[in-house]
Image (cartoon, rainbow, N blue to C red; front, side):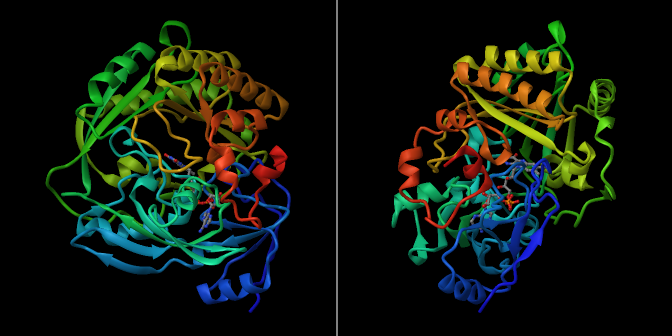
Length: 442
Ligand SMILES: Cc1cc2nc3c(=O)[nH]c(=O)nc-3n(C[C@H](O)[C@H](O)[C@H](O)COP(=O)(O)OP(=O)(O)OC[C@H]3O[C@@H](n4cnc5c(N)ncnc54)[C@H](O)[C@@H]3O)c2cc1C
């Protein structure tokens, strides 16, 4: 059996800053994929819904295997919350079925348009890291298709090294075919949400310290154009699952879709400052306490389809770093000051807290500290220079960068960010690679 690979010239990563041809096929069944893999040992990389921002999900020198056709539920026990599904199933499709039955993923990223395979490969985190850690902690088993060993069933007990390398392993340990996942019970699909003003960065640290004990979900939006006494001005949101109420599936599909690429110049220091003022005022004009369905709380960006085209034809880079707890105040302040000075940045700047629940993956990004994430329109060398300046701050603080969001980190930052790389390489599938590794010369 053969797979038909198509050559794609349009950007396939979420940030759209990486171009260059990619060869991609979507296997219609596991049988077809296995048959292809038996005859082909060449370079490959699994692909989910393409929500990784940079080049870690691309592989111009190899073949991309689009796993989204392998998206079947295998089993779901609504009494225990244990679900087994093919890795191409999206969180969107999973939650449509399980949420109305009172089961939710323990950890969700800021979009539901990711696959289970992609969520594992980047060991994704949510707004509840201090309570639940990363997605990989709920994975009980998975099946890999490797170029050197064929099908391998992996659990944390059966092959701890391969499990730890696969969780957060950027698809480099083989194709993930299916996943067994423990879901968490919810009494309602609504959350009780509080929205509070932040006057400056000090407010964030005070409010955060008060909130982590009593709230499962915490996150701050920061206006990255503010400096001096207003540095860190923003909005703090904290939420808990409601103790009772409706159990309802979310709306299907975005409410609005951006039909075309906009000229990137629309995002500049003036429009950004104006937008941020309006956005903050709108957030704070809502009642301080409110009940909201989970899609509104977790996935506000999913309401606008194709929002990544807002940054124009050259695309954008996302920058996400974590600064260790003890260096947090000074490090986040330095990053925000540098960004504000540059006049670059994005309307969406997110500051989250990572707790000390250990991540199960050798290359998992979360570790105790504060994580700042924001987008930068790709303005070429000026943007790359700014990101290099941010790297220096992260490096000086002993922090780390997130490869799922990256498209340009230098090799030394990757090596500084992941101290277990040597152990990880021992479990790599020899046929798997990515543009990220190629760029780093690995
Ligand atoms: C709006 C938005 C919000 C986000 N919020 C968060 C967040 O809060 N926290 C967070 O951690 N991340 C976040 N992300 C990033 C996103 O969760 C991750 O990049 C995730 O891995 C994307 O999954 P995907 O299915 O789109 O996979 P892709 O982007 O297609 O691939 C991602 C990685 O997974 C690998 N992969 C995918 N499927 C398989 C498979 N079956 N077998 C082997 N390897 C595979 C790929 O090789 C690649 O390395 C966000 C992204 C967006 C666009």
